[in-house]
Amino acid sequence: MDESLIERIRRDMAFEFDRTAPPEGFPAFHDISTDRHTSDLFHELEREHLWTRTWVIGGRVEDVPNPGDYMTFDDLGVPLLIVRGTDGEIRCFYNTCQHRGAPVVREERGSSRRLRCQYHSWTYEVDGGTLVSIPDERDFVDLDWEQRCLPRANCDTYGGFIFVNRDLDATPLGDWIAPLRPMLDPFQTTALREVYRESRIVPCNWKVTAEAFLEVYHFRHIHSHNGVSVLDNRGAAMGLYPHGHSRMITPYSKQNVERSGMAAWDDWKYVDQPGMRTIDTVPAMVDCTSSAVSIFPNTIIPLGRIGFPINIFWPVDKNTTRLDWIYYALPPGGEDRFPDELSDDWKSRRSVYNQIMAEDEMNMAPMQRSMESPALTGIPINYQERRIWHLHEEIDRIIGTENIPEHLRMEPLLDPYVER
Picture (cartoon, rainbow, N blue to C red):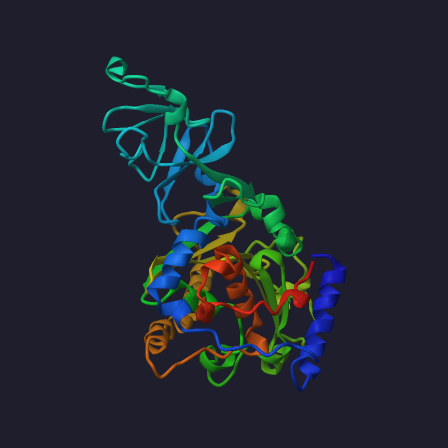
């Protein structure tokens, strides 16, 4: 995050505070059809086109540290297997034996130099998924071994995170994640480790959960305590990136500026973080704002100098989402992992963040029910909520506009505002 980007964000915030209307020429949004959140048709379009063709976080490289280490990954709707090969490369295969379809591994985690189906012991090697052993081979007529290898999914890593994409012809991860790197690179993500994780099942469409984290229009209404909000949504500076990614930097409120000993909303300086290791390469801006990035389609990261949680939204079905948040930070004392018993400082941090998540979650199920009501005919989106429109535009691009009924489509309006 170089100084020019920080200064651009500062100028954008000043503009946001001073404006009395959206920028001149900014487009008027049509209502977003509630059927995008409620209909079987759109859910099936996403299942067929979106989740089969986009990169998602599947884990961390330290989850499979040694050759032969594997873990299962089922969050894309099909059984997958992430494994580190004998050459050190991390790959992803379908966890489906090519004989009768049984899983080649049944445990969620394990280690083996051979992947052996427990049904009939067809066996595959971990480097390329090559079929290497079949019991009673004599009973198969003209079996083509090369055609019976484990099918692969796309797999690559960035900053210690493992990304998976079922589309073997997808844009390479390095190109796809590149727009976010100026924001993410300073956080030394390769050195971070899991602090704790939480998971909730929420009765709403996955986009309802994602959209809650794409704007701060709601912040002072549900996150205020004793009448005080720590953020001022009027100054939120947003950036839209290619591939549906985005950022949002929100300044402190006047009350929080005073409480933090700042001279003004842009008096960005490092703040003491007692009991926590800090990431030295992170700019002071992050200590004095709410800084967040979204990784399309289903990940939001609220950044911090001590680390960050990643919020991931997994569709269980049309009306159900699994909401995970996993906190990553530098382990204490130079260790390679966090202890099972967290320090009091981390327990306090966990309690505070969980409360914020609970405040967001309390709206999600009621919103889903309202979207299914004839009382809501469409969702009007304002300028502050433009990251939501950006998400939906990219969903349509991935699905293919030609595959979407006209009344469900998003008009592509934001391309002039995408940073390249």
